[in-house]
Image 1 (spheres, rainbow, N blue to C red):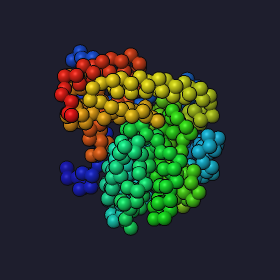
Image 2 (image 1 turned 30 degrees about the vertical axis):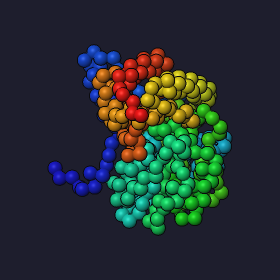
Image 3 (image 1 turned 135 degrees about the vertical axis):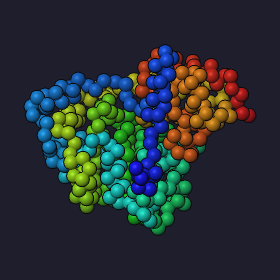
Image 4 (image 1 turned 180 degrees about the vertical axis):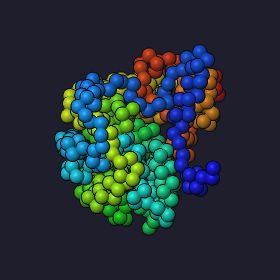
Length: 391
């Protein structure tokens, strides 16, 4: 069949391709350590599962309002206020089957031919993909190691043009594990206010932080009316397979986004929304325990990487990814990714899976057991010891 030309604009996530290859190798009897997939290896807390089961038995098996159950939208609003992130009325909250629809709906509603979308590179590949699919021009904003893999306001300012319509932020960041500072947010917000740029701030890892409190452009006066907050349950509550996300939109965007919900998914499943409310209103200890374990794994994997000749790794401030610099090994990132999988039995991702500025880096997800991390580090150390580091 003949596809429409803009289908060529859609990319994919390399993590799933690497996972498929790793599974093929495992089927032959190989031992593979999975550091490629970005999802918590913890079980969804039991009280959330029970809430979903009770909801199914209680008849939550039919259509619900397209923006979401009123009680869940209210719960999201209260959660955001309780956690000190923002104050937003429930009618600005829209529930989605995953976080990606929030990206899609926001970009489709705001951006088209003639518009430019500024996005972080390295960054989640869907930012560039969806922007191009919508007909807009994606503009990469480099995240450099010397700036802690954070957007540099001066560099951002140089990339802004009269066509700049939307800026996508992600903090804590995938794949780099970096996090914007208060000063970063203030400087970026000032540029957006001055140039009339809307912000989509992806904060799905906001609860997976290891340092000071979470900072957001939403903390800056004047930004709430031009910022879309994207968040969800997948990372915070180990609910990736539940497909649950939410957006908080400026008032004038709620009705257009609701139209996109109606035209695309009708609504998010009813029973899962009951579980989502139980997650927000239930005990927070499972989240704290998970983050504490991620911190332990982070410290282990970063120390192990920095002990390898030719590899350096900055300490992640959030999420559950290490982003080591492997430039001194003299091997392109995608080649090293393939070697580590096929020869060392370690599945990870080349930094170039997240954009051209990811060359010379790998992304390792430490959302796996300590024992698996230790096996992976030994295998990686053995492999890189046979390479010749570039001076």
